[in-house]
Length: 167
Image (cartoon, rainbow, N blue to C red):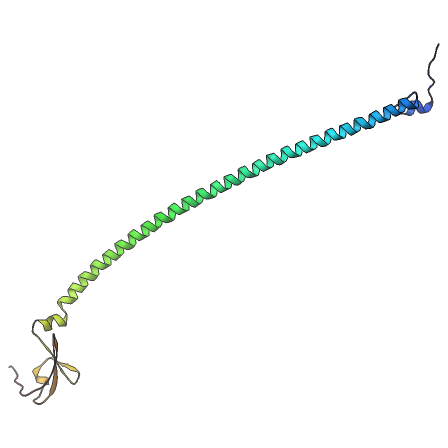
């Protein structure tokens, strides 16, 4: 009863209907502009999200790297303390061993010094040699033998003039 607009079958199938071409242009332009704004908004949101994730991951990497460095420094300090402690122990043990051996060496040296042939010679005794052999008995010598007499301060070459044997 009036001025109703006629609809065609195409109008019923279309997702949007415009009464005039101008209205259709407005709808199309508005829709493209809205989509461009939406795309721009989504791109900015994606960029911000990526920046937040990057910052979060960067902070995580720095935090874990710092934790690893601190752990390694602690281990190094612990190992350094253990090495120093062990070195001190080894040095102490070595000093005790050296002192013990030195005391033993002094004792043995004193014992050897007491029985040293040079000490005997220093008390006035002498060593008699004939043809490179040591003579300990007068029975091994004859008149005219060449002998060497070793004393504490030198050597003497002599010829036997007389041999007397004790009973």
